[in-house]
Length: 149
Image (cartoon, rainbow, N blue to C red; front, side, top):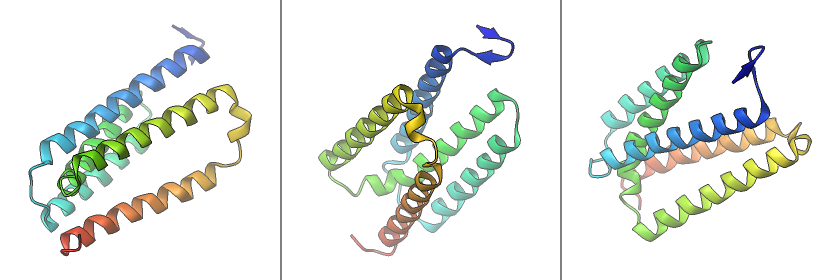
């Protein structure tokens, strides 16, 4: 499977696809578990602290298994946090958002595999967009907790 400690391209793509699927399933599990919970400051604080702790785990480890467990823990914590927020939306809206996110992820993944050079240099823009999405998500959670619809 490994040649000189380096995966072949197809093996790398398969491993990344599988790990992405697993992490997505863990996130979904967190949402499923907390879907009926009441959103509270305590829930936000605990899940946020757990997510930050897991970030330190996966960023600080050079062991792939430990890093994967850190990413999975962060995904579970985020799922637990957003479960009560998702419960405030109609089911069809949630399904539309899930399918839109999956479609974008698949399209971007395929394009990245087919044309890797096209994505070189846009990492900072993608990171800025992701950061804005994270802040918007937290703002939405706080606004929902404060009683805004």
